[in-house]
Length: 306
Ligand code: NAD
Image 1 (cartoon, rainbow, N blue to C red):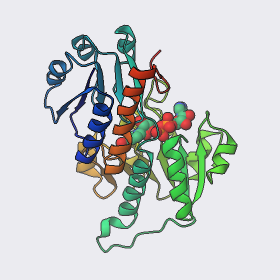
Image 2: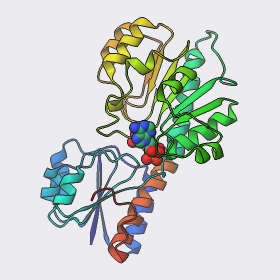
Image 3: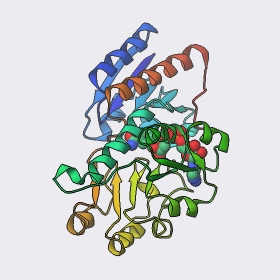
Image 4: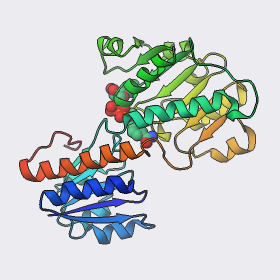
């Protein structure tokens, strides 16, 4: 069996060492394609691979066509909108993710962005503090829970909206449940997005929600840029000089922000949420273990396609 790790943005080298160990200890061949500049390089590398591990790399029907021996694809990370699930199924390939493995890294990034912003980028200007402020978590899964945990440490008042998570789970994680999304946005000066990108959530955060936020509103998006309706976001920025947007990955309308709204936004140039050694090791090793487990026992616990 050959396991290919194909990542345009590489794992930390310590993570690669550990992934290799897991694969080789199982008696499989390890193969690595990093920093590739063209997806056609993945097509070539995947030709004789039985398993493929990726990060945010797109797994398209072209790659699946090229990987004639592929049996399993694992996205080392939580969101799996980069995998063409229908095509995986059509190619008889099991698709998996590694949920929860990078959640703390993402949650810490939320606060790294917030703190830099509300202390005015350490420019000497007077900022403000987090204690007693309200934070709303839109989506309360793995990352949302860690954000709640850190928010508690800052003495914030925490509210969460997630139609699929019970009040008890929220309460156990220091958060009050909000069942009406408008109410979440009305109540909270800080809103942090932790919902998946899918057909329902696409562009679901727009003007009608954002206009409800209180003064000095800060919207933090470490989820996916696609959940934002950028026209609505720009409208709010035009109307509300107090509004800030902090995002892990630049929006498509970044140029407008650069021209008009300096000081009111932070965009990471590359997705940075999971870019810690710990998260790389956790997600990479989990992906390798899931591949081995799938081959040895048929375990499909983290399967995301039908
Ligand atoms: P998760 O699956 O553990 O949690 C997502 C939560 O969203 C679930 O509890 C689900 O019930 C909830 N949800 C689904 N639809 C919803 C809706 N319409 N409204 C409100 N809640 C809804 O995922 P996670 O690991 O917590 O990741 C959250 C987001 O962060 C995802 O978009 C993921 O892709 C993204 N992410 C980004 C990075 C990064 O590097 N920036 C890393 C990991 C995850």
